[in-house]
Amino acid sequence: MANVLVVAELLEGKARKTTLCAVTAAKQIAEGTGGSFDILSIGEGAGASADELSGYGAGKVLKAEIAGGYICEKYAATVAEAGKGYDILVACASAYGKDLLPRVAEKLNAGVASDISSVNIDGGKLSYTRPMYAGNVSGTLEITTDKQVVTVRQSEFDAAEASGGASPTEDIAIQSDPAADKVEFLGVEVVKSERPELTDADVVVSGGRALKSAENFANIIEPLVDALGAAMGASRAACDAGYVPAELQVGQTGKVVAPKLYIAIGISGAIQHLAGMKGSKTIVAINKDKEAPIAQVADYFLVADLFDVVPALTDAVKKL
Amino acid sequence: MKILVSIKRVADPDNASKLKVSADGTSVTSEGLEWKMNPFDDWSLEAALRLTENAAERNARVGEVVLVSIGPNDEHTQRIIREGLAKGAERGILVEADEGSLDAGVVSAILKAIVDKESPDLVVMGKQAADGDSNVAGTKLAERLGWPIINSAMKIVTADDGKTLDVKRELDTGVATVKVTGPAVLTTSDRILHPESVKNGVTPDDHQYAKLEVGGRYASLKGIMQAKKKPIDQMSIGDLGVDATKSLNYTKFELPPARSGETTFVEDAADLVDKLHNTAKVI
Image (cartoon, rainbow over all chains, first blue to last red; front, side, top):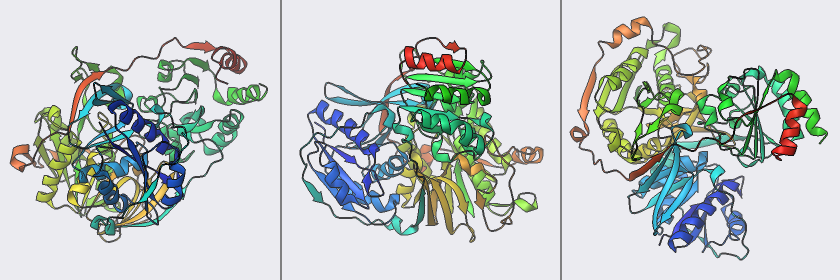
């Protein structure tokens, strides 16, 4: 019987959807082992977010209001103290979860199963499966420490649906950590977009180095993105060249996406890029080179000059 | 400034699709693949070298970079340490360990012992290894040391030899800026290879590093010659007095199923839209 604590991720005072993916994993563990799950809302706006998170069937929602920007050392001791009452801590393997949870784990002498794609329960025994080697091998592991810390891959766990009811909420004490005095938060630039979030979109349109400029991204890719109501992504090369911001990077070191439709435009398909998108349901490649490695994963391949064909594609989509 | 950089050997990440799993599923075999320096460590080494040199004076060294690699004590691990030494690091340490005996917890315990011996001002390491892809060891190390962790640093600026650092780090949703008082553990993002990503107060602020596309700098011929004479200390986990109890136990490895179906080549934009709308029904 495993009792699970979900560590919520807040952005500008609201729970990110990543939190709900972690809730789904926590429910699987709790239901599979006959345990229960609670949620910890921590950060600026933790109180209001706790109210919102009380509708997902948790035993209770703990809240720890911490003002100011997120710093790992400001949160970890409080999460660890709360975690002492649980067997397993779960968060999403977002940049936040991967930053915070290992520090919490070390405070609890716990092993970390990072970025898991599934929870396996066999006769009450828990194991986790996770992609390794840029998604080319999947490994199944058990955590052998008393407490377990797990981060879950967002694209592999659907967001939990609100289940009605209202879990009780409870304030917990903030714990201090001397390491927090060594880091001063100076600011954050949050990239705003009207488009769906990359990790949450049904359709993703990504561009690569072949776009050649930020202007071409704006003039060629963005109209197609908007015609499809899609999220925009990019290869590492396109992000590195400054055509689009780094937050749009899809791949081993960027976002992992698994939309219904992924359209790769002018992306050759380096193994590091495939790692971030090969779980997509339908994959389209538009590339001049039909031998490009993207062909290994493409369901549909349009061999063409993107500058000719993408505007035509945008027009055809608009006529649907 | 003295910086410890951990470097791991990994099976050639650009050919990871050629990996195989043993018949009983208990191990990953990388036969036929070359051992390479983990690319994420290579980026971190680049950052550490920039922090400890005057780039305007032919990359004259003004600090010390110590490399540590944990792995089998063989020609491959030694070659990867020499590669880092040839790029400019001063010394190497090889902690002998069977790969199967390691996990992020054990690695962080070993690195803690090395930090205790070496007392660096910073540890700069890859945010993940291209084999395990965990992103855990750096943060666990920071907690063991009671130091701050700054993950995914894309810009590092110091004017006081690393005592304090202004760091920009990548988030899912943007970029955060923090001021860190060392000693600290940093991991780096892809963007740390940019021409203006590191300012160390010694190299003139307007200096532009050459644009690096994929990895850190190449070793010069002189660097390669010098590296042959640089020391690599060899030690065992036992020598360090580290508790090497693992917290993770991998029971099975599998190759993920290949994507089903063939690639359909389409004629033009209209044909593509027709297939996506009427056959795949995704738009």
